[in-house]
Length: 249
Ligand SMILES: NC(=O)c1ccc[n+]([C@@H]2O[C@H](COP(=O)([O-])OP(=O)(O)OC[C@H]3O[C@@H](n4cnc5c(N)ncnc54)[C@H](OP(=O)(O)O)[C@@H]3O)[C@@H](O)[C@H]2O)c1
Image (cartoon, rainbow, N blue to C red; front, side, top):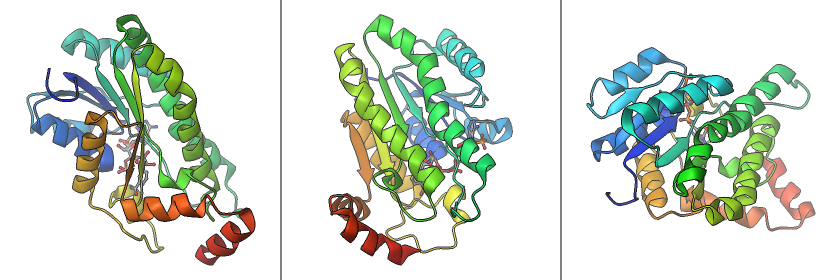
């Protein structure tokens, strides 16, 4: 096997942004990549450029569809060695104009989407006592930030979930990683009207993800400037934390 001990990689949320660029990078490096998202046309366009990319359209909120996807992908290409879950949704959410539908959708896609994908891929990894699962959270999950109650709470849940699952997964021979990006230029952030400090290009973010996963890091976080600032802010006493973050309102 090549570096990273993977042959067959499954990526959700691979039709655009981080998932697409990571899928392209891994495919260029010669791995067998199975890609999922809802937009079959976009997935097909990505796969057209490669012989080693196969398309499995699926909605991550549909647990049965993900189980079928994993069964089909493993029947065609063998065990999935690395499963990377990038599917995500983001809606800016002020408290005054709280949209419960968007709140629910965010938690469903971001949190239950990862749970459903884990449920589809982990049984085979448990029986092989091998494998690597990784999901994309965000630096927005480190602590509550204004106008991001739904997104931030979904991402905090994903970080907590990774911390909670790591000891048991490691005991079973399975590696787990949580990816915490800052701002990356993708269709998700293209709609943002606010300043996005230290924003990265998706190609650079994909390289950071692959490099961190290859080293089997538990947390893959970038860019270091924003990660350092937010980790520092979250160590402050609440009175000082809120005095500083309210300026971003
Ligand atoms: N961009 C950033 O600055 C940034 C920062 C931190 C974390 N993140 C996280 O990185 C991940 C990727 O985001 P991105 O920036 O690359 O955004 P993006 O370009 O909008 O990509 C989101 C992906 O998720 C898929 N998706 C959405 N809902 C889905 C569903 N119900 N079922 C299956 N797939 C679904 C989309 O495909 P379809 O619409 O075709 O289904 C698309 O492939 C997300 O988890 C996001 O929260 C992004």
